[in-house]
Length: 316
Ligand code: FAD
Ligand code: NDP
Image (tube, rainbow, N blue to C red; front, side, top):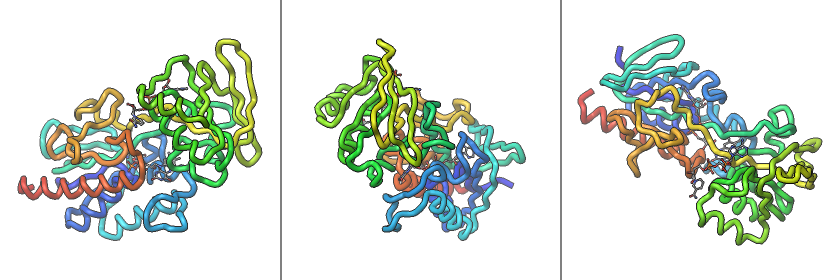
């Protein structure tokens, strides 16, 4: 049987798409993945604690609980969910074909919402069993406003636009922000560099690397090393934020959709249309700028509405 809409992914983008598609009687089939991209079904929010900026939860909500609620709302309207990773697709003709380890099938429209994975460096003290999410984070916009970081010294690792942006953002809460970058030259655009350099709370540690992060129940200090002198230095701090890039989960597409040089799916601005008619992309897999649950959900809604329109206009 050919499905009307198949959704690949399981974060806010995928489930919002599923809710809209199901309510439009398109009987969506959703593949939520099995640790795809190293992330549990439910997406990146399964890896965090308090989510305080998703509307509707004035007291905040724990990330995993929010993911469960997304899923429950999808199934309530009849979305069929498989805990399987889509390994391969054939987008060369319609209906499109897809494969998991357990099954294969056909879909008239495809919504890709496979997200992205924030890169982390394997620094002692920052691992899951250590201080990850106890002061170590990969999302300043998400976690930076937490009380534990207020009026404290904070670290950002990276030298790109994200690092500049995150350091500026964190300077609103912290007393001081160090940007640790492994080279002398920053990768960030000139305007972003200038903004960070003009910020009196930000100090650059260029040609430095982080050796270790320490603390008992939260980050208490960060040890850095000047790579030119090999001189180590331990600095009292309450947080460390990785801003060393993301990896979009697009490998399974094997180049069948247009992507940018970093692998993000290219969509027509203001839409979720991809380079293949009938294939739509939503959430972080096509967004390297905002990367928020609410923006992912918003584009998930757009993808479902656009898929519905596509199916209606193609009499599928
Ligand atoms: P994702 O959440 O990335 O989910 C994609 C899912 O698809 C994953 O489960 C993945 O395993 C699955 N998948 C991948 N490939 C396949 C495949 N081939 N087949 C099947 N499934 C696949 N945003 C906020 O707004 N507020 C916050 O407080 C906040 N906190 C955050 C804290 C952390 C630690 C992180 C990492 C991010 C945080 N974010 C926050 C960002 C937010 O989580 C993301 O913007 C959002 O989850 C992106 O949603 P998405 O639907 O695009 O995909
Ligand atoms: P980038 O890939 O541009 O930069 C990543 C940075 O992290 C680089 O400086 C890199 O160092 C460093 N890095 C990578 N791996 C490691 C590691 N293992 N250890 C230490 N440092 C490491 O990623 P961004 O997320 O900054 O930006 C991604 C894209 O999004 C860019 O196109 C950027 O312009 C865009 N963006 C735009 C914004 C805006 O305009 N407001 C805001 C945020 C992002 P090195 O330079 O040595 O390789």
